[in-house]
Amino acid sequence: MQLRDLVNDNPAHLVLLVIDGLGGYADARQDSELEAATTPNLDQLAAEAACGLTLPAGPGVTVGSGPGHLALFGYDPLEYDLGRGLLSAIGLGVELRPGDVAARGNLALLDDDGRVTDRRAGRIDDEPARAIVGHLQQQVRLDEVEVTFEHVSEHRVLLVLHGDGLVPQVEDLDPQTTGLPPREPTATSPEGERLAMVLRQLDRAIREALSDQAADTVLLRGFDTLHELPSMQERFGLRPATVATYPMYRGVAQLVGMDALPKVGSLAEQIELMAANWDNYDYLFAHEKAADRAGHDGDRDAKIAAIEAVDAVIPDLVALGPDVLAVTADHSAPTQLKAHSWHPVPTLLWGEKVGRDDVRVFGERACATGLLGHLRTQDLLPLMLASAGRLEKYGA
Image (cartoon, rainbow, N blue to C red; front, side, top):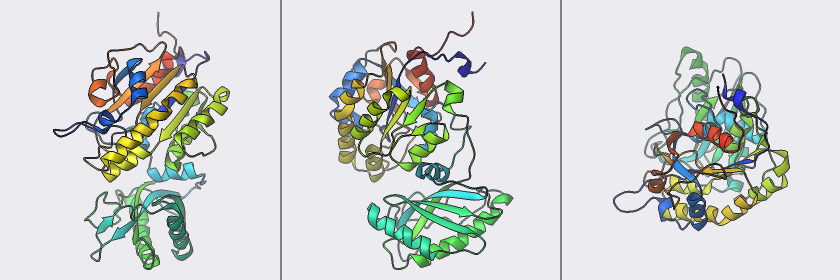
């Protein structure tokens, strides 16, 4: 018996709001960023909701955004291993062909000894970054392998390689920290040796092409090729869509069968787009990036401000009239660590049939006492379905 066998077609609207990187932790000196933020609307939702802490891939496991979002959509992220390059390609509308390998890259700066000094090239703006990517596309050529660069956003770059015998079984080249050189291309299996060799050639060509640019190299990670997942329609009987704006999040949403509605800007505009398409879908996914960006920068004040900005538009989201609303994140990104972390994610589930607990404010320590307890992120969607009256009783 599969969960899909219990799903009915009762009319209902499910909404998922992902505040990317929302989670953090209190330490001896201060509350978490969420606890320190002024969030009257999220606090009101929490007081009317069931709250808890979610774990994207189990205790102690730090996840990337791809696995974190797969879990939010009801998929086991340890079963479905997707490279960030694949997700970015799909989100950008890049059609991958047989023999293609995609990777996500960061424009980055190096010192004279070849060590990374800035993984994001000073958080370069879109326009100069787009010009650098265009320069790479014009200058970089490899024998027997077709190379394509696409600008994603800010410092983010999509790389697509097309050629014979390219198998994405290589380690990431991004050291994920400063003070170290980019990693040497290393195959993780004999099948990946050709790609590792191509990446060595590519790295030299990229550095030569960038010798007079505002970036020194491209740090690559998340190598993958095209493959398919069972859709949310097949698994959960939903008509899903996303209003997310960043290509990677649109990519993972499309990979699980969501329609990608036209790109807009702010979260407020995403909510307006949801309202305009309300009758066409029964599951809508919105996404806000700013808290995650501030977490990576270690900017506590900016993360608090980003959370407060989301709080300001919560009444507009509630006014849509969802039967069930979930507010959570794909992972935690504490400013103390300047990175993703394993810390549980504060989560609330709101709706007429959800139930309520004694939580009165939306924060990590408050949610730890909530009715939902500690649960796997992938179990959130079945709870949303049940709370919307979309799951039948199992057994006699």
